[in-house]
Image (cartoon, rainbow, N blue to C red; front, side, top):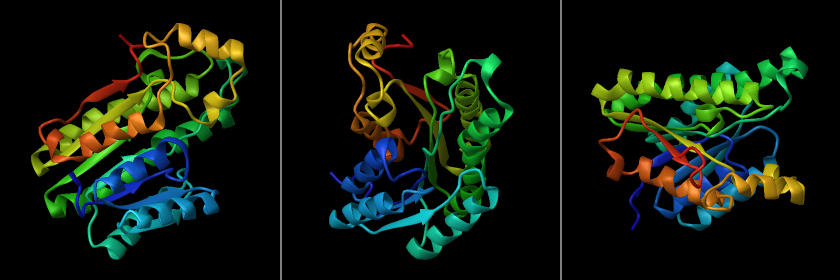
Length: 248
């Protein structure tokens, strides 16, 4: 259908997992896609080549989400390369799990700086360009941990809850400029992280999911495509839980 034909998207943390699936899904709908990566240069190159094989333009940019100045530099580079920027997907994130009483200050700072401050930096960087265009879509990848909490993830849950608050506030600030800001809160997704679980841990996990399975990255990506398209042009400030029914 190519519902995003010739739109330009930037996906942070787009070299693997959910980010890679999002980048491919956007390209499948005709979007030109830039991705950021922190250290997985070879993986990012492979993602860019796959985007290009779909007949779209692609580019990869190395970035540390904790470095505030990187965001503006990369947004400027994307606009220079592609001519505009229609869709920002804040996907870059890390976990450093521990019970609160055992969590170090560094673990807290690293997760909050990457997951929340990084998203703030990219939102701030794209605002002027999208306001000039009089249109834009910002999609923040939160988590159900930010909605209902999760033991052992105080830092991660706080960062993802903060992302929801930022989404709602920025949606109000940019609504009159025809810029929609929404969030997706995935549940448990088939990624490297869930792949490391023991059979016993997987069984416990499935017991709390009404649908009795984890999500495929492509199922998260499909919701991103919807929010990036004109089909969601009257939606802003929303949090869509894509979680197999856990929050329900």
